[in-house]
Length: 312
Image (cartoon, rainbow, N blue to C red; front, side):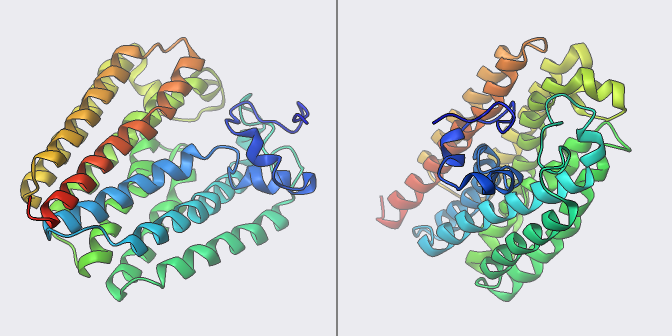
């Protein structure tokens, strides 16, 4: 069984996930980006970085329950955020080739039904959030303001990736807060690293839409950097690595964590040299490769926490 062309979106990466759902549910699965798991994976990784860094600083293992809750929360809130974005952007989406087939823009899901679906996903996210300590609950609620701003940022600035960074990187604070019930310098520095990492990879992602974005008046860092996009992404990644280094230093972690950061940095350098603004297929592949970059850092932090918890 294969997806019919009308049902498959251009950037679908896991159509087999759609086929696990009844066909009548496919538009809702697409609203939640079930067929594009890279979104929740990139949302999840800063949460896991933060949880591992917090545990590493305390010389213990990351809280397994927290890691699981962040996984469920990332999937739910990525879906809710994407649904909200599609509702707000439905008129713009109809004018951009890559997005005109999205469920709300194409009329396959009404705005009313999309809002109900959004509420259901938000409820799951709320259940996860209210499973954490009070400080984390309050901190998590603040993030909703940033999430609500993102769909509108592209209409007023060439730096919507900065707003996306503030939202998508928020897990850099949440993992630490869930562990300690407070925040400290390493958490803020890790948040900064995740923000600039997000800005870098989303600039690469935005290279797919520069032509249409320019026509309809949508701003992006890809358009802002123009021919200097490789240098722009390099600068963003450099700041991310710098903030990450400072987070590890202030967190007083061990060698394995720095090895993870070095692997992350090397992957970012590889991406920069591979950027080709004219090759949309490569841009999408580079964007998706950040799943590996983020995982390398997480594994380094987790290995270091394991070693230090054993007194190594």
